[in-house]
Length: 505
Image 1 (cartoon, rainbow, N blue to C red):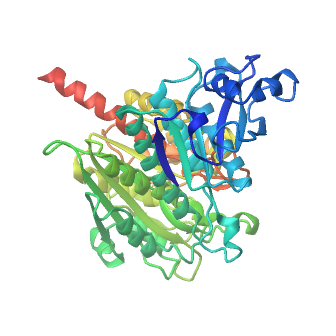
Image 2 (image 1 turned 135 degrees about the vertical axis):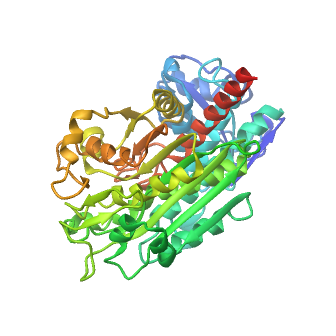
């Protein structure tokens, strides 16, 4: 879709429909709605006066202008309560607007991002509106062979306004939304199309030429390195493991990097601890953390974020076979820590253990890992909130703030030391699973053993990476969670590092 700015008011904008937002607190049209109402001989006012439109959230009415203005149609959409207008509300409303335009088979629509003093400022509001439109229209359809007309989306969204700030906001939203959509594509691809090797090729395809250096280690190189935890997970599959390393040097000189680590299990059967058949079909999505890291590197590079970022993805399939890792096996990880495998379906923490150890080679300022790690996180937090655990209060606070701004909310769980006892093994240094009680916490405590003293945060997106029912601007299926959150975090991270450097000088 093409996003354009226009200096003309809505009544002079050439498009298939113009959009008017209305709060339920308001008894009459305001702002741009008032101007349009005057130009159309009171069409919007009559709609409100007759009680046919209340302005409830997502309530929609379609008016025909009978040639009174340039556009043939006015889409009036409810914003809900004025006091509840924020960036997340704007994303949701404009997603609904874009889908309405698609249902009406419109080629273009226009809006003035005008909330008459409510909500964020013009640039932030425009960024949210564009994100809502682009993310709301997303559909994964490369394997659909039906009528192309079913795939058609509006081709143009026109925003009334001018200025460099507004243009920058629109361009930022386009870049981030593209990265989220690419992330959703990766997660949605079936496991026969997106093997560990194919994921590595996609990372190169999406990042090469954008200032990101992508290095891929194959199975033989991983064996030489000594990543036996990663290899233990991959052992049951005919598809070899891959280690994908992506480095973006947007920072100054030899600045130490922020390292992002994403779990890349391209299919998870559970291994010999086989998952129930009804749950297995969605396990192509167990690489959503890896996809989020790739998407974040893509957005960071395209935005030119001035930071040194390293992305690490350990990729493998977890399958049962005669070679597969068995419950009771002991693996020697890259760090030298020995791990008793008590549950082969707790494979994510095994591949992350080696990746977190590898991250220390970069002397990182901080490490953030993101993974569809535990079913326990879904039980605790559902499908709307991701889990957060970490060792550094500043890091976790910044992530939580970024979550509030993007609508990708986080809830922090405690890394309670007493639960470390649950991870002790009788025959090795540690075991990889401690059972269902506090499963999200014990999984994070396992990962913590491979982090050392580096500031670290762990994001468990098991419940948020894929939805069984669409929500606002997030479709059913892959959500692309993590990309907008991490980009927002990176913007905060850069400001904080710049402030710290200025203070030192």
